[in-house]
Amino acid sequence: MAFLRSISRPDPDRLVLGEGVKLRSPQFSDFDEWASLRDVSREFLVPWEPTWGVDDLTKASFRRRIRRYQREMREDNAYPFFVFREDDGALVGGCTLSNVHRGVQQDCTLGYWAGAPFAGKGYITRAVRALIPYVFEELRLHRLQASCLLENERSKAVLRRCGFREEGFARGLFRINGVWRDHVQFAILRDDPRL
Image: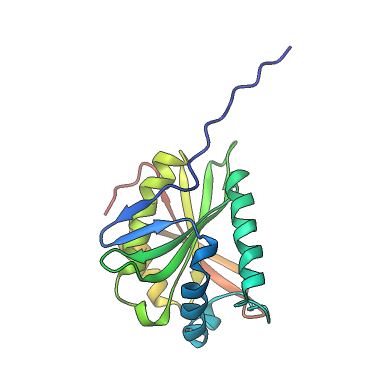
């Protein structure tokens, strides 16, 4: 008879604190602020993201998104976070840890976005720095990887400032705004020095 060992799962409602930013799981009550920020940022975000659905900014779509997030966290597959400015609580963007692998790989993938009014102000860099210890200490993974479009110099700079190392080039890795696009791949390991 085999005995199953219970696996301790991270707390999905945990608040992750960074320098001047707070990260927490998205909630239904975030809809108005999220939809407003995404709407004013649409032109800025579209070149870097998958195609937006026609109902992407509706309450029904957001409700489905939150349910999916909750399921993914329960199943230890992904951990989404909204990023808030610490001083006034304004939503500035989001980060997602997805494709969590336990077993042999012990890794996950980082994705992030900043609303247009907050881009280039360091909030996402600070959020990524705050998530690195969360990945290695709370999720107990070995590797955190991220990819960005070849021409996305801002995103490359965020990753480099946070200690990620460039690992190579991936052809047609993600479908961005309806087109399969090449990406540069980055990663940071548990034992890499922290910047």
